[in-house]
Amino acid sequence: MNSKVFVLVHGVWHGGWCWSRVADILKSRGHWVSAPTHTGLGERRHLLSADITLQTFVDDIIQHMKFEDLSEVVLVGHSFGGAPITGVADRVPDSIAKLIYLDAIMLNSGETWFDLLPEDLAKERAALAESSSGGLSLPPAPAQSFGVSRPEDIAFLEPRLTPHPFRTFTTALSLDNPIGNGLPATYIECTQPAYPPAKVALERARQHGWPVAQIRTGHDAMVTAPQALANLLETLAL
Image 1 (cartoon, rainbow, N blue to C red):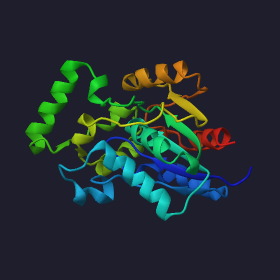
Image 2 (spheres, one colour):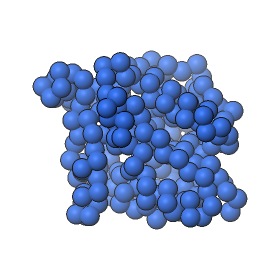
Image 3 (tube, one colour):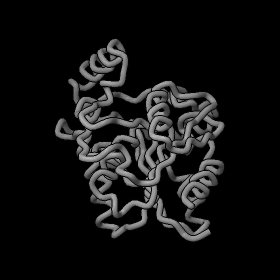
Image 4 (cartoon, rainbow, N blue to C red):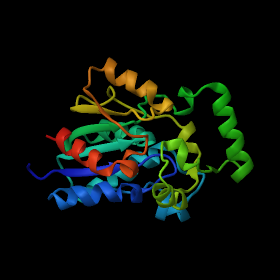
């Protein structure tokens, strides 16, 4: 297989570190791989502030691609990472070869993540953010909520999860073009167990007529099934 350029974008509470197992496999096969961490999370947790919005996350990835001088990128977004990769595709489509949404959310222009949540759940999370940090961030959920059950995977995941900048949930994605901006795109559904918050995006992918692949593992597939996920990403990158 020809060498590809992968940029792997993480979801809520995670950081680029969560992709390490998949990245190591893809790199060993000759691909170029990066996994940037969004502002305020992971090793960038010291930058957490009330100024971080969803647009910040879009800018994080665009600037990463710019300064790494990347082109023909296979841009992979996991979970909440689906929102920023949609924004990146809207602004710099010429740098992207393909979009891959891994059990990822998909927002229309003017839509926030909280717009897609049941009203009671959105209020519950807002109250949790307020009580834990004065509304600055949302504390991490347990690893089991991501379909992670093996003790060694929980031990890898939970100590690294960090509070998530809250305004990224309540600020809208702004697009000039339809979702995907005409780029080739594929949706990957994690099926065992299924992740209910991804259901809306899965339905939207089908409405767009995108191919849907499946992987038989939980939501954090990069942690629980790195070999299978690397194989699938490599295949889809063709």
